[in-house]
Image 1 (spheres, rainbow, N blue to C red):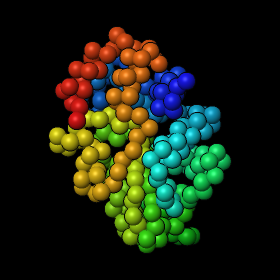
Image 2: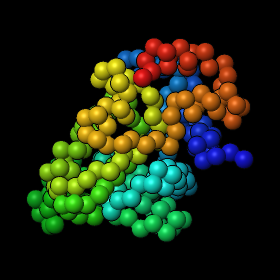
Image 3: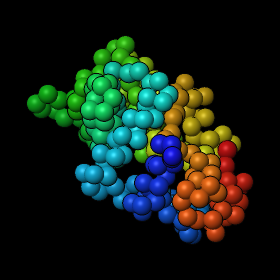
Length: 217
């Protein structure tokens, strides 16, 4: 019986989110795999995705008042995770997300959803972490809103690549901000899934391991 990490890897492949081949990443690196979260487009897909995030949330014992979904990709992820936690696990948490600009009428403010207050514990929900840019962009916005405690950040895939230096982006997040980054799966999990026959792709293993040797952290 497959564990939730293996099921998630199969889910990504089946929905053409995880692709193998020859890709040029935004960073300029040539990679033998690509993760395209933009392929999640249906209600069924986002509902399943929220459940995987919820399982990761529970596996690591995260306990917070609010999930923060950075605009734009983090918005549906935070909402779907909150729904999965409430509906399937009896854990009711709030959610909020930032606007791209401060609203100066109506309720005003930069965030929509659960109001952030001093002392709140929050968890950031994002898709994939490569350089840690999304975290660095959302933190000042959160800190300007309230003095909260960012307990964790949950992402779908940790590419386990070097961030701005020799450390991984996830390690940099902890060293710089004290934020623990948890991923549903890592690049090592994906390689293991191929080796164990959970998904196809053994012809890409050599290239993936070479890429890990060059850029991995």
